[in-house]
Image (cartoon, rainbow, N blue to C red; front, side):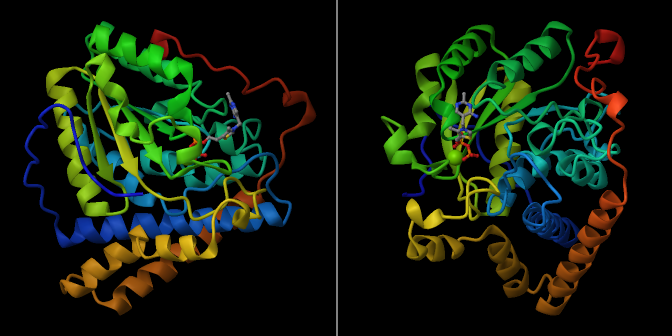
Length: 357
Ligand SMILES: Cc1ncc(C[n+]2csc(CCOP(=O)(O)OP(=O)(O)O)c2C)c(N)n1
Ligand SMILES: [Mg+2]
């Protein structure tokens, strides 16, 4: 799939975002952490420690880093000028990385995957339903495209209440075909909702290639009929991703209008943990080619070739993050399962205004 950036409307100029060595190291560290976390999840699934459905973000890390470092994010309190008006995030079932980067405790995420009492939903939701509204993260949804109107609803609510927040509404390339997405775009365009629709185009919807499921695989165009600014960006280059995300987010915050963005990425793992036979829908050669674009390898090369960090330092970071994931796994695994009499707890949550959302 050709990588290109196009737009119907003229885009705001890219701000000259520069990064300190400490920031660059942080992006690297967080991407490596997510990768190890996801690999551990795959391991735990195969050990029978995790049940149900589970989908990892391996290969897509730069995308979440770019967007979630560019919003007002509770994980990074200095990003929230008034100390309370953080932005909102909602996504589908491939949700571990988004929660991690919004500040949800990774032990609670791992425990949720393992069905434990200390999980984000008391072990009742599992991998697809990580939920942490106190950190601005509204899930974790299993019905393809089903959460898109909910994300627009979040943006509507903050606009209606006069709060200074924007909403990031993530979806897959397959989800972009759902009818409700088009209805939501119409309303968002009509009502000028401060909502960014982000298509994580990883080239597949389960075992179906983009070209087989989309009448026009140029998904970036889909905001245009609704008079929504629309473009395509590269999701495999963490730094470009961060710059583009910051530019788009600034535009939406300033103009209080929606935005549609297709982000080109790749899913290195199978669709979900139960999908082992990837060769049915893609070749080993294709996978090998895609690994040349690995966002972590790319950032590592950048850091080393520009003399920002040595290979040894980056490898030490890799080991530290791996050990951190091991400790998280051990802590989650030590937690008890829910009691049978809690079976109806954590199914619904109070989302009233009194709670502040
Ligand atoms: C309404 C609905 N139809 C079908 C499914 C089964 N299903 C689960 S994931 C998926 C593919 C979605 O692909 P995409 O939106 O590209 O997301 P990705 O898994 O690539 O992140 C399908 C068809 C579902 N969960 N919900
Ligand atoms: Mg997809």
